[in-house]
Length: 178
Image (cartoon, rainbow, N blue to C red; front, side, top):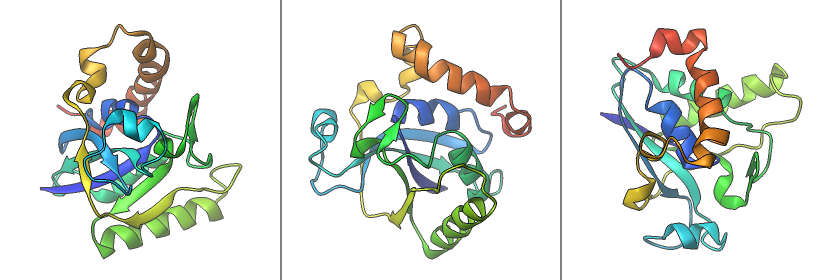
């Protein structure tokens, strides 16, 4: 089993999306890229730990490729806004790829360069591509957040529209979890 670590704003949003994909066995919300060990949600939200909210996506490369995961990553958040996704503002919401090997690094950098060259976005991509060091699992109540809290306002107003848009795409129809 391989894994990818992506930061794309609130981890609840990306967890809900990546959990839908065939070949993804588990999506774990957590923290990466910071300066302290075993941070709490409150510490990360303070902006003083340098950690990003991320998801660790465990996947089977025989079913879904890292490139396919990158496609989902790029298309389901705004990689051109620095430390911000929608109303979520702070370094913990930054767009980031934490590569686990040189192949992931090269693929990520090439994908980012191609998107910038093709003007896929109006503004330049600010997504950081950095070496993975450590992943800290978020507290239990942050895991499977959307699945367990679908009726909460944040889930209805922020997560559900993103998930609905993704699930209506032809891409999702080809890669949905069966």
